[in-house]
Amino acid sequence: MTWRKLVILAILGAGCASSSTDPPSTKPVYEVANLDERAFMLLMVDRKLYEPFVVARMRDEDLGLRAELAV
Image 1 (cartoon, rainbow, N blue to C red):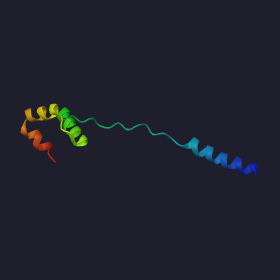
Image 2: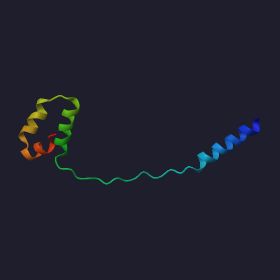
Image 3: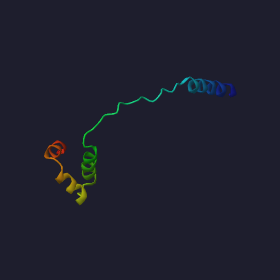
Image 4: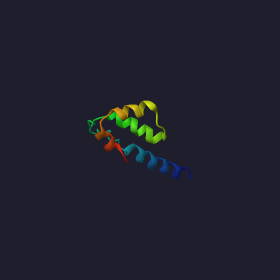
């Protein structure tokens, strides 16, 4: 009975020892225009809350950004 346990442990040990870890992939970094404004808009949608600061900042921005972010 103990030799079965040893065989199972040997198989499990070999399986764990042979697994290789891949290096983490490097993702490209994208430059995004108006990143802060987009983050504020996402915050408002997530929270379903319209904070006066965010609304005032979006009101002062150009209409192109507002149209682009509109869903």
